[in-house]
Length: 114
Length: 108
Image 1 (cartoon, chains in turn yellow, purple):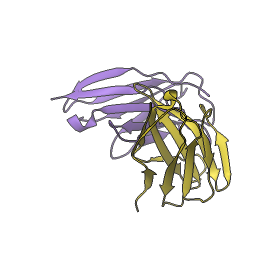
Image 2: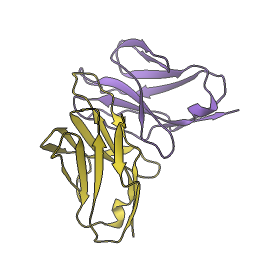
Image 3: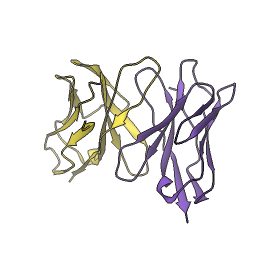
């Protein structure tokens, strides 16, 4: 199993450009998450999904959109990138089991917006 | 969501036992206490989770007193490779809330 993979690993955008980050997991997990991590900070939840076709807002959803058309994929979109969105983005997934949780994280995508 | 408070940083030497304490005064009845480890340029990795008393696995132990208002992650005989950021989290049903974590530096 590859686990959780993220594409791309690095990206540089200009202000106003758009892009989509792809997260894929091959563990048949129901739940998927997108986080951002800024220097010296912990991770902040952007959006998450509890199943195919469903999404929900996290702590910092503004400026981002997500889609979960297939169970194994969770896409994070930036419609009009801003310098404040320069960050490292982590995707995670976990199976649906009551009161047990191990989130499996991907390697991260380092995004710079100029 | 209930918040957690943990030291910003800790220093240790190889071979020592390290205890990182986390405070969570407003923990809810259905919250589980979860610890993650993060190395530079990597995503966090699950270490251990517990609800009450003591939990032990091959990596660490987690001590939780009866009132559950705090918890202590214990790493036995740390090595240089244990240098990382350690996050204490309260797990609600669907989501996790990460704080800034504790930066553990292990020296020779």
